[in-house]
Length: 576
Image (cartoon, rainbow, N blue to C red; front, side, top):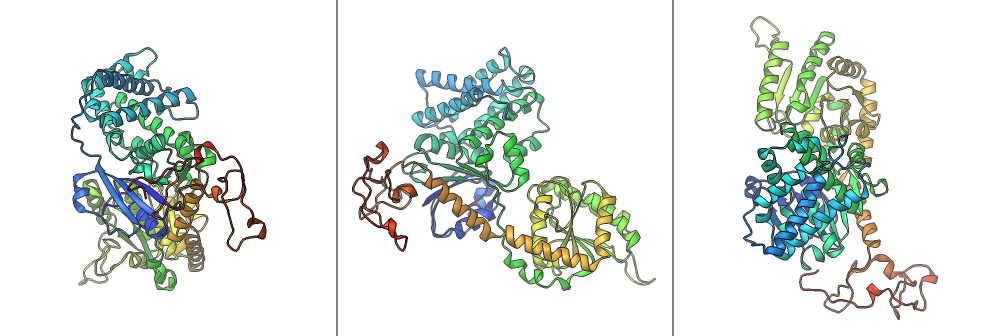
């Protein structure tokens, strides 16, 4: 089948989110064809180029989210009226959220409210398609005035009523950026209209083209989230004025609810993401947890040789940033050194941006303050028991070497989604001590110790318990490796998605019959059940099962076909 893979700020670019798992997914499903539709986040990302693409990627189309030139579309009087009506309805819905639920996306949201948002969104999409773009209209004074009228209307949220001109301009600018996918030329018959299935790698802007493909062509939509986009927005919008936060939370909440409602299946990457999706209105019957697939082969040698670890060394691996709470780890290590003076701590990782650089400097200064350099004698050079290192150095040439350096791996985060470093440590057969954040408990599953976040004393006691008990370390490490190999490999991930693709397409009504050069229907141009004898098959069709039971071979079933199956439509150019 042909899959339209929808990405934002990631694959096929060299840097960005979801790049690795998308590449592994595409390479692991070589029996399918992939058309990649990618939204980029920055000029730098585009300049860095793409990863090497496998042959099953047939086409790549890209568009920037970070900039948009005016499309030059001049709306006539009727088009301006349509825009004012649709944008006004969208703005009115954003201002009508409940006080207890700023997003307006909880289960308390009525069906009428959801329909109102969806009707406004698809009305703008249809107008953008008719007028070949809405960039100018979304940036116009008319958009700001429509937003202002909605904020001043009776019954609007209190925070919205307090919006001033700078707040309205900020919200209008954000909505214009978020709605840029409406103006793309991806929704023609030879674009997303030609795929069998759209697979969005996140909700938000990445899934918006999938919503429109479903609206215009009936293409089914699959949404995968390893980090919930709505949660990311809440965490990132803390510095905005209250009116801006309220309106943008309402927009992202309504959009997430619409995406979850229209998707055929939603695949959260863990129970933490699943709870967020349910809170935003996702139907439990549509949710299928699919854990991220990771390459276990590069950790195989370390995982099969647990005895190579230094029994007196703790290892922390990850991006250096405030959310990782290395300060609590250093204070915990001070308690550990009082009980076990021989213990060492190796912090392995690069800083994440300018904030990470500053945080790394703070942690180095704290380590020097807590642990003065220790020398073996009067004439020896002192060493600090805490070392800050990066991968690819002389002592740690690879990531596997970093985990191999210690007997216990520590995760001290206060905010975490899916803990990749924890899974890597499990592949290496290492006993772990982690803080109870994000999906940690779900991932570790009883094969490691978990303590509350921001609690150095609890972290120290858990580490001491493992440092003093080699047999327990070995037992937990072996159990952790077995669990990781069962749940978190690339193979289980691609197998799960292959089954989900088949399930969605098999339940999708026939949209068209696509013929190959010989005039034969292409696979998956019709749903799987159309090949089974029964009342839904075409008159005169003959079905024979290869190697199947005898009852499946015989006279063709004859019945009146459904209306949508009576007129095969030849494939348009570029449809397959």
